[in-house]
Amino acid sequence: MLSLALLFAAHAAVVKPVAWTSTSSAADGDGFTYSAANVGDGKQSTAWVEGDEGSGLGASITADLGGEKVLTGLTVWGGFWYTQNYWSRYNRAKLLVVEFSDGSTQDFNLNDEFKAQTLTFAAPKRTSTVKLKIKGIYNGSTFNDSAIAEVRLLDANPDVWVRPTAYKASSTFPADNDGDYEVDNTTDGILDSMWCENDPKGDGTNQWVEYTFAGPTPVSKVVLRNGNAYSFSYFMKTNRANGATLTFDDGSTETLTIKDTVAEQTLSFPSRSTSKVKLTFTVVKKGSEYNDLCLSEFYLLP
Ligand SMILES: [Ca+2]
Ligand SMILES: [Ca+2]
Image (cartoon, rainbow, N blue to C red):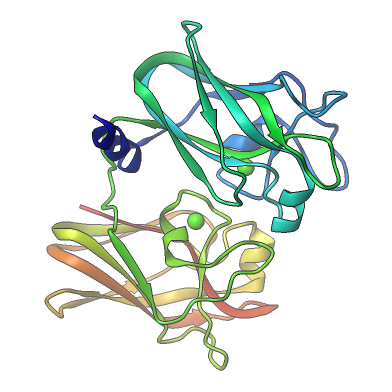
């Protein structure tokens, strides 16, 4: 039973709430907003921060699903993820109580880690709302305010994309205060997490990433977010791909023309069955500030 539940969590489709609300939120300022909507904007760097007098114990956020859905769990980016330094300065949830629309609850103990954590429900749950209430905290070093950066609600439907079982890259930029730059950041649904190359001399041309599947799988399109998709401004500052070659496990290739846009794009090619796909960047558009090629999101679909 347990392994089945874990399997659901690892291969579940994401349920998008119609709205997030909170019991309180901190006043916006210094270019930051702290409303509950920030936990559903697809960015780890934006967070809900509660606005209570105290530490945030008892504060909650609620997702309105717009009707009943069956959920199997959720993935939470606990704390304020603007940078790892900010993360350590704000309170993080230690005990999170998940409450459903029928009033039933389940408690989850979170690790104090700068990492997304997937919480799997005891059984698939039919509900129209999901409330996350902070009942225990890890203390921040500077601010006595609790934060949650992002929440993704999961159902039992399989992914519509092909989930890789392994990732590889020609090079990877070392982790810094903003987090890491590993290839699996391209399939986490988060716009401001990404793979970036670490070729000290080049602009990213001929660098590559590779996605391996559990076995031969039909693929005929990719959905991607090019470059650094944190914002238009960061997109323009950072190298992004304008062309690439897909190489399949039989050695055959397809040429991709990638648009120079921060918006999501879908590119199609003749369908084939393959157990891995290598994406080699052939045309790179230089950013105005950082000479590193990045890719924020990349999904292969049947
Ligand atoms: Ca966010
Ligand atoms: Ca990402």
